[in-house]
Image (cartoon, rainbow, N blue to C red; front, side, top):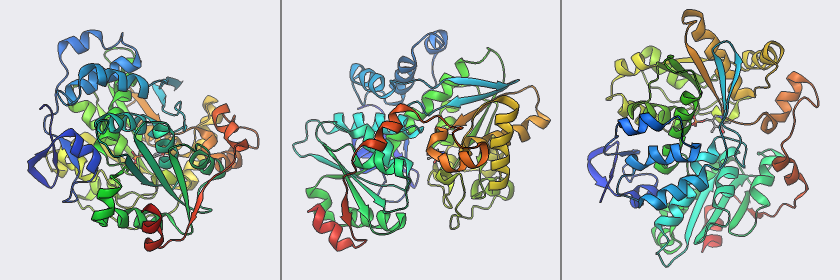
Length: 432
Ligand SMILES: *Cc1c(COP(=O)(O)O)cnc(C)c1O
């Protein structure tokens, strides 16, 4: 039977991997967690520096999913999902950037989405009916999910995005793949897109008939592969140094994956939660009061989150105790003006081009370093600067950013999208 999963709201009830992944969100609105978090053994630590990145990932996920997926299948899944690198770039004395944007959609979400797509494909391989994956996106998630599921047999993907509210290149990432990927251009906001998706799941008969599943960011299958690159970063540093990870955060999936990596045995001195003015978690760390609120728009817009969806997992990983969390994590927040200044400063002082999310991380790293000059700092760079071209050119000048070929070539492709009014009835009828 192998590893099982429970909801943070019902610690005594367990489900198997297939249910945790295909359900995504437990019925009680908690979040799925593995029953056992294994500690990596001496065999792992004697070889971890030598393996390829994909093999390292397999060696981490194998004990986590023990018995739930055949070993060779799992190894193959990881090697297909992690087919690009996450290099650690030194930008100053004891200051490093972990580049997580070398995948097809140029953001770290490729790691989670590519692994989840293959796992879902395998879990439903013997089911007679096709799986329909619904995803609402405000930008980065849709591109990663569409690219990850493209041509995965037995799956259909429906991406809902708000008309005129994603960047041109983001829209091309959703609307030019074709095949099993259908883009719905919703005449409304991101919230409307989410509401339509929710309505489809609430229609039990439709959800059953179309075999609906969700690819949203709280899926446990997206979280697990995000642990890989914390190990990969640590092994690129000199041995025996204290590592501090600075994680630019919105829904806190990345930071939660880091905490999971530490629970599996990765030596980490400290995690730093870096946010923009949407600072619910830094405020919680300071006051002990968790107060979600409406989000505020910023230039680091993938972190504009007012109710971080992984908060329940972070609490669970700290024994539900505020005091425990404050001993292990510290939070800093920065506004847009500081972020813009940091983009310029990093360029001038190190010649590195850092995008707005990474720049928030850089500010947090500098703040921590004042009192801890000996620590090795690793800042997660969550996306490629070309995804935020407007802001980057405002700060560094026109032409300062190289657009990678895989993004540039999308500009020439033709957009294909289905226009959809923001009404539930219309969407449900279309799905039927
Ligand atoms: C999704 C995203 C984030 C936020 O990550 P979380 O895991 O939700 O905290 C940060 N930066 C970029 C570029 C993203 O796309």
